[in-house]
Structure formats: structure tokens, C-alpha cells
Amino acid sequence: QVQLEESGGGLVQAGGSLRVACAVSGLTFYIYGMGWFRQAPGKEREFVAAISSSGDRTVYADSVKGRFTISRDNTKSTVYLRMTNLAPEDTAAYYCAASRSNWDYPTSHESRYDYWGQGTQVTVSS
Image (cartoon, rainbow, N blue to C red; front, side, top):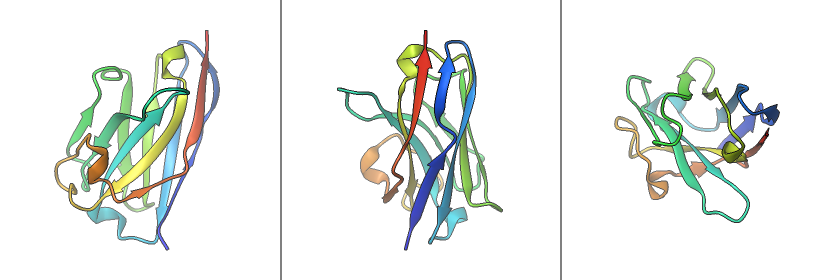
């Protein structure tokens, strides 16, 4: 049974930092590309960042470039999203996802992801 479990969300003030994590089990983690997406209330889910299976390639949404960093630890089957200089518009539920087909080149396309977590809430107060 494949499980992706996000953690680390919470309430933070604008300008603050937070790191969310996604622990994966039930699949061979190091052959999957991983991504983070987010969904704010009343909005569609949007791409945030993605990383290749080895961690040598990353891609970011323009809205988070320079503020967010995606990384992974294949020894712990965990992917991270470090978020800095947070703004109220970053408030959303953050989801991690695993892609077998895009193991080498990270992708922003939701349809390329096979497994999804349940999400962790990040709230940024002004």
C-alpha cells in the first residue's frame, strides 16, 4: 500500500519560514520524481515545485522561485519543501505527489503524478 504523508504545516507570520515534509512508503522511492502542489480555498490546485529521482534537477513555479526550495533524502524516503519569506497568498493546503514516468525530468503537470498525499495546511498571517 502506497502512502504519502505530509507533515510540518502550521500557522506562520508573513515573512517567516516553514519546512514541510512528505514521508513515502510502499514504493521504491528513489526511482520516483516528486512534486509539491498547493490548493487555496476556492482555487484550483497549482504546481509549486518538483524534483527528479536523484535530486539533481528541480523546477519551480514562478510565484515561489527564489523563496522555496525542494529537496529529498532518498535514505529516508522523504521529500521536503523549505519555504521562506512567506506571504498571505502562500496560504493553502500543500500536497506532495510521486511520478514514476517523470523520474528523471521533474514536471509541473498533475496528470503525470501517480500517487498523492492528503495534504498539510499552511496558513500565513499578515
